[in-house]
Structures are given as C-alpha cells and as structure tokens.
Length: 427
Image 1 (cartoon, rainbow, N blue to C red):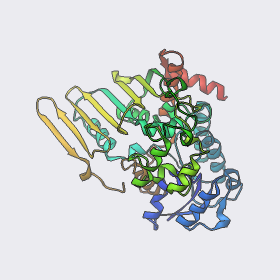
Image 2 (cartoon, one colour):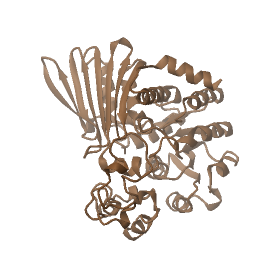
Image 3 (cartoon, rainbow, N blue to C red):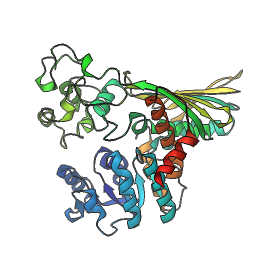
C-alpha cells in the first residue's frame, strides 16, 4: 500500500490516475488533496473518503503541511507544475507529475537537477508509453521485425469537438497562460517518437497557425455566447448542443466528464446554467484563444531516422495514427483499435491482436491505469522508471524547439543549440 496526496482535483487528478486507487484499494490510497474549487474537494471526500481536515483550498496550503503521504500527484495547470514539484520534492514526496513538466525549458532543466539532488522517484504523465499499442510497436522495432528503422509518421487527430472544448474555450486556449498546443497536447507524441526512434532528435522544423477559430470566420448574426445566439440549435459548435446532446461530449450520452471541468455536478440543468457565464459557453469564433489549430513537424534523428508529425483540429475522429517503415518491413495502426499491422516485405501481413498481449489494467488507450500501475510497481520495487524526467524532458525540448521554429516561420532549429541557450538562461 502506498499513500498519495492529490494536488489539483480535476479530471486528470480524480478521474484518471486516481481511479487506480478505487480499483486497487490494497495498493494505493488517497489520503489528502488540494483544489481551489470547493466542489472538487467535496468530490475528493465522497469518492476517496478523505477527511475534511486533509482537504486544502490551495496547493500552497497543502504544501505548507508536513509530509502527508508517500507520494504526491501534481495535476494542476501547466505553469504551476514545476514550482509545486520543487516544493514537494523538498518535503520528501515521490511524484506523479502531469505533463507538461513546464512550458519554460529552463524550469524543466532546473527541476531535473533538483530530482537528481533529492533522489526521488518522479514519473511524468506520458501515459502513451504504457499502452499496448505503442509498447508493441517499440518491441517490434527493437527486435528487428522490420529491419533498420527508416521513418516514423504520426498523426494526432484532435477532433473538431475536442479542440473546441480544450483549446478554444478551455483551459489550454492560450499559450501565455498555459502552454503551446504542440507541447500541451503533443508532447505525448514527441515522447513516443523519441522512444520509437531509440536515438536523440537532432533537428526540427515546424509550420502551423491559428487559421479558423477567430472572429473573421464567425457566422453572420451569431452572438458572443451560445446561450444568447439565434444559431444555438443549428451551429455544430453550439455549447448547448455539445454538452447536452452531442454523442461526443453530451451528458445524455454519459459524457458528463467533459462538462465537469466547468460544472462539478454535470446535470442538464446545471450545465445550461453554467454556460451562461462560463468560458465554455463562448462562441468559438469570439473567444480569446491564440494556440495554433493545425501544425506539422519534420524531425531528423541520429542514425538517419526521419520523422513527420501532423496535428489537426479538423477531424471527426479523435485518435492517433502510426506508420513506421524499415528496410525489411513496415508497421501501421490506429491507437484505440486494439491491433497493429506488421508487413514483412515479400512475406505478407500479420495482424497483431493487442488484447492478447495485455498484462495489466487498462484508460487513454490503457495508458492512464498503466502509468498508475507502473508508479505503484516502481514504488514497491517491482519495476524501473519508464517516464522519468530524464526521459520525458527530451519530448519537451522537441516540442518547444518546434514551436520556436513555427514562430520563426519554419526555420530549422538544432536541438543541442536550443538546450544550451535555455540552460544558459537557467544559470
């Protein structure tokens, strides 16, 4: 049994990682938590039996206490992560640290140094490494199933409805308040590509922009807020439709978890009332968002391996695709379809059933529970670190360097130089 204090009791904190504590109460127990929203602390008490005196109204209040648990889950907003992690390490906590580590590379490097000084376990929330899909792909590459690795092509289809929720109306709509979309959403993908490549990335080049979700594209006659808009029943981005009846986000389809970010108790009545004032009720063309809605990244790794990555808001499905080529074969598949396709040139195709290779609990394609299970095994001496800061920081370098390239019009950025410049600013 290990005990956990939760810093940030939102969707990722209470309903992703800590679901593990509910499913495996003999392995993990939530004993304390903090959040600035009182209703979330009420959920912490109801769902995990945390006593009121162990519920705190801010991260500062929680971190001011003596050490309350073996480990701390930090699942607050992006720009709070590094500072909270520093304080938690000083208190003696081991950490599950939600990604990104920080949108400021110098802070990532400083935290990396602190972890080495304190000798604590810190697992970053790169949950995709814990999925059967990517783990099997990595195994096939490593064991030579396709010969020498040549290219990796990855696509993240965000989904028009998901993008409007998270990156137009939601918490991650502005990079100056949180992170660039390429880091916040896609450091997962950068991490996986680095893992599959097996060698460091040398250079990146990126193109992308915010082209659609801005006022010039607002329908004629539309209003600033959906609940005031004459188009609320016909517009596909209508917040009223999305959070009530949509098959993607709607509470009528048991998707109340999406609305829980702005209303703790997502009933139809409560959602409609909250949309009158919440940022999630704004017109997607009249929000204050500034993150790009589509981007492409070209990457050059050591050993001549090349990578391409595309992320787009303009998709129906919300999924990730993978295509890997080698000198003797190729691998392709879609995350969430429970299979991978392995083609050996001249020998035909094999379909690998991923359900048959599972050996642990499954969420996020199996990754959420997989990471929590991996952390428990790490803490109990049964496994090694899989997504340590030393490993995960490379994805942040790749994403932040790509964002720097995008902002500079697609210029090539050499990662070694990029890190040196950030490290210089940290000294």
